[in-house]
Length: 75
Image 1 (cartoon, rainbow, N blue to C red):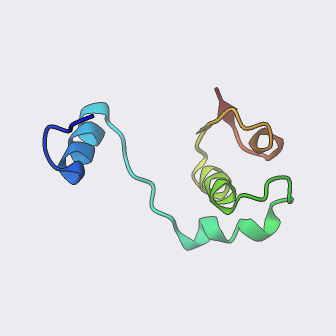
Image 2: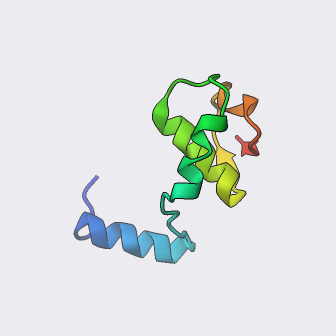
């Protein structure tokens, strides 16, 4: 799919158009890692779980392993 400009500009414009904020990774979220049970072995998914816990966000996922964690999910 051709973009109407550069990727960084396209992403910024789409974020603004849809009211999407970025969620930076912070130390407090990372510190949740040691508290998580080992249901899920994927480190990226585990960080998403930590971010959702730290910032009280809903994760949009169909992953049956993620729903085992104390995090709100929707699909």
